[in-house]
Amino acid sequence: MKPLQQLCDPRESIFEEDYKDTVLDITNLIDGKISAREFFETNYVTDGMRTLLREGFRRFARRSEKSTFLLTQSMGGGKTHNMIALGLLAQNPELREEVMGSDYDVDLGKVRVAGFTGRESDAPYGIWGSIAEQLGKRDQFSDYYSPLQAPGQTAWIELLKGEPLLILLDELPPYLRDAKSKTIGDSNLANVTTTALSNLLVAANKGELDNVCIVISSLQATYQEESKEISEVLRTLESEVQRGAVHLEPVSHNTNEIYHILRTRIFEELPEENKVQKIARGYADAVEEAKQMDVTSESPETYATRLTESY
Image 1 (spheres, rainbow, N blue to C red):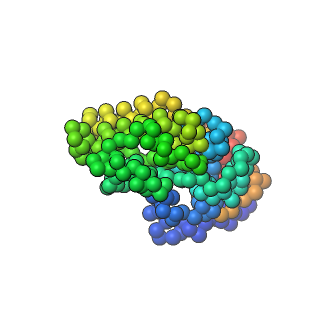
Image 2: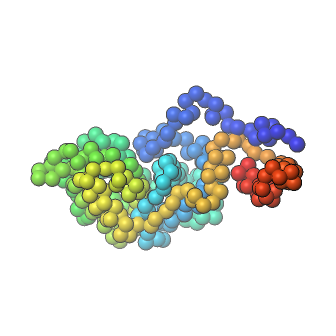
């Protein structure tokens, strides 16, 4: 029976000194700084991600009425990774069948992608200005820049209509927290932003934008950490999103997906199933011996199953 280090071949990248510092966000995607092939080689497609990819492309092909997806996840990274996955496939048609398999049943070229991460708190023209600029239409929203004011649903429709489009909105609480301190007339940027995004969500359900898909990361988990004023802003925006959004959990905690994620991320190659079963059986035999000596009450078969699942 070969030891673990001989059966599992780790990726070279995990030994790099700066490996732990590599945290991707939406800005990396928009700036074209992510290798799509490398991303999918080292990331496991969970059930939640598979659903998002399938339904996203059905929307781009005008085959779905689901315009908005709300990603909810208690663990860090899952929401942003799902957004990046959909964004990369939108930008790289050649990888769709390879990653999605039979779930990709449409025929589309490149899909436009625009995104915003709330860590970009210094966006001079607000979230709407950033989206307009990424689409090459910054001047079309010039009336909403000075002073900053929320575009209405008709303005959003005129800006976004045309070819299929993906809009990604991530990490909004930090942005809204900072925007609360920026006065605009009798209001502030946080309230104006909430109105702008609410109008965007309404516009996305109109027939002219039936090939536009919006993905937003959940805001709810931050309420208890925020002041009363910013919590109210977040709740207002969350309630707008909740009205028609499809809720998705990127990683299911009651399955073995976390094992698959770690295996794919860490290892280049893993042993064949029969070798894993042989090792699991060996551990089960050892547990059986220990049980006969009253050292443990663990079930050998249960132990073998757990080891197989988590190997």
